[in-house]
Amino acid sequence: MNCKGVILEISNYLDGELGAATKQELEKHLDHCEECAQVVHQTRATVGMFCDCEAEEVPGDVHSRLHEALRRKLHGARG
Image (cartoon, rainbow, N blue to C red):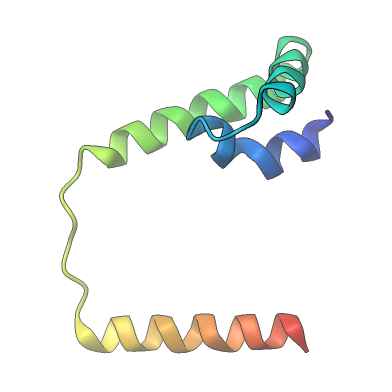
């Protein structure tokens, strides 16, 4: 596995959703790549910090604008 592979799988890795072979490859890479190991460490810390937070209510207009922006972005990526 290379650095790009770690980035693509980081969420699955932190969620414990990788197969044994992929997990082993990723951890082998982390043993030799300090930059990726730091990214995984920081991501784990950030997720842990936000998991303890209460959800904030998003105003309806912000919610609508966000969904519209995401819809445009996804539509543009497909076209």
